[in-house]
Image (tube, rainbow, N blue to C red; front, top):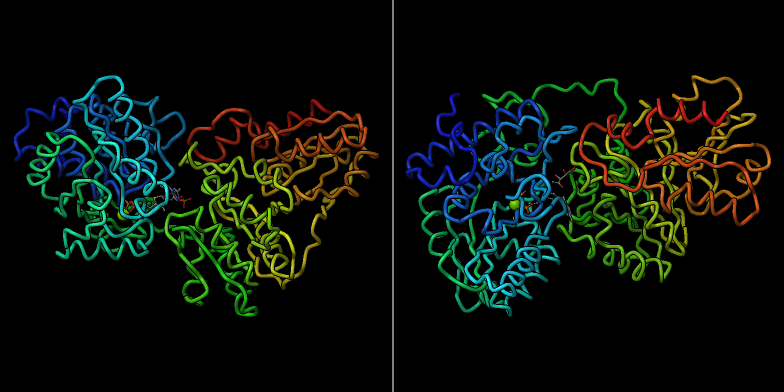
Length: 588
Ligand SMILES: Cc1ncc(C[n+]2csc(CCOP(=O)(O)OP(=O)(O)O)c2C)c(N)n1
Ligand SMILES: CC(=O)[C@@H](O)[C@H](O)COP(=O)(O)O
Ligand SMILES: [Mg+2]
């Protein structure tokens, strides 16, 4: 396809002179360009396709970057990136050294706020609006574009609640496509669905009740209508709310028909949307599926088992339990804080709750983990998927802090299985009448064993495994990064011992005393931040017991790690096989 208009767009200033007809052609080309690049380079697709017209209309009407535009989550901002000077770089999206898959302040002045985690846009845009007012800048617009799943999160409500009493120059645009990654849930979603079909009793408009002027719902693919209403809104001061109806995946039939799959579909044929076959035959299962399928097995045997996910049934594979036991598995929407306290409440009543949250998203519910779960020593089982480096989603999504923030909490058991079989056995162990909260963290992607469905066997809490005895040097590892350690050790003979420590808390002190008495040097390896993590726990153990061995810790250094392939990022962080080999050589 030729990009007659798009090829001449170096920034939003080039949009201003275009006619409506040209803007409509631009929408077609922009959509086509996103499809062409994402088909080959992968990434988030459906969300960006759905906001093509909205993106063009926003940059056409508003004076960006002077007017400040905040995209919630940011996975829908590909069109925004392309129109704001990154068209030629778009093919590097999410690759090492390339542009980020999410808006990022250091990447462009048009990216008013860095995003990745949901529901921050209203607070951020409100903050900007209040700051503008303090500076006397009263004409500037501050715009938050937020999806129907993201607006149902607590943070978004908090922002709306505050904005409604501020008179700030804030425009909240609800991009309502009735779906998150999975179908949206909750009473607000039901309300919005009714609003779409014309049920709009003014006196009970939830948005107007919060002191916003409400506009809509309008068709988010009608460029002319969008331009017209945005021009009107640009003249209105104070908090205002525009309800826009769009279709996720718009313009690619298959993406419209299977919106869950095409949220981030992997490679596909750009002409048809047909997914390129990816054979999984003979490959180990993904960790998430081992979690999901094992949970169903356990739930079949134990009726007290309950599952919770905050808006990630597909990504976490809790969907299997939702299908098998719909009354015992809950998708609570993007509500990590609620998910944790809900789990705590259930646990007080004897439910055995598996609360599955991506490691990075549990950060949002830290107080709930401490105050509602751990302080009351409730038996909630946190299953933290996507722990460690996640790859192309980058800094916002890596699960690198969990070992640190969980290890610090009294009563918590913190464990990182070495592979998916250990994950299965830990899930089994976790529901056997433990009296503490427990966090099981495991990585994105596939495991290492084809036969994962071994008979259930309880693993002793706080017990490490000696994989291999050595002579001078012991390598202590937690989690699936042990794979790199095993590969590295193939380069050496008998002198190096290898220990799968499994538990970060409680540590296997008996094993550690043996190790510290036997070896001269210790190397710890983890795929989390070094400061305060597993290696730190070993250093603390050594100090507490007056051991003066040489201890070296490998893990993620004190810096945010960008996006790229996991192997590339491991190299940057210094936890790849080659770096481990070099470390071992220098320690021997
Ligand atoms: C705090 C947090 N939890 C979960 C996610 C994972 N996530 C990314 S996009 C998304 C769905 C967003 O849906 P919506 O806001 O409706 O936007 P759409 O994809 O429909 O454009 C979810 C759950 C996240 N980014 N942040
Ligand atoms: C935008 C977002 O937060 C999600 O779409 C995330 O990218 C999902 O990650 P996984 O692909 O690991 O499920
Ligand atoms: Mg949505």
